[in-house]
Image (cartoon, rainbow, N blue to C red; front, side):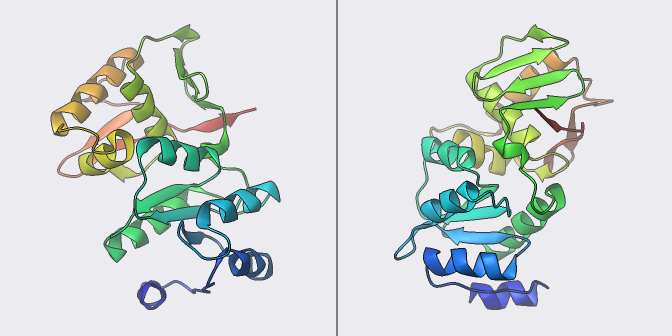
Length: 220
């Protein structure tokens, strides 16, 4: 059913029944992007992803999973996933994620998600140490604000809704709402000296959410 929906959305699709087939098909067909279900026979999605990255294959990967808490999500990104989507999901959401990942990636190159250091103008993010520097000075940020900034910087130029941020960054861990997102956005803007009326980093998209508009690059 998903193959048919993706084809109707304009994609050419090759399917595999398990991770072993997926690895063989990837080597043969060289796809622009891979959608991996975590729960697959013989070789699950996460191990398939690990094997792809170990052989230096940086084809973009979106993971589909039934249950994935925040630690598992972070681990998946560190292992090389470009995005993830919880089941059940709206197929239109998957199409939107596929197009967003394809826009921000170049075939065969390592992703922003795999870099330890990311630079954006005067800002440097050390993802492993969870440190944020602006003009060379470390900034005191709450852990959630660092995670929020990391998500923005690994998804530049994408409109991201508050609901998506709550899901991807907070993981719906507690009874929180949009104000929690807005408070962390305000915290980031303060340390970045970013004016919401003339933003250089985080843009508010009325009725839709936020977008990180500054250029982002890997730091060797």
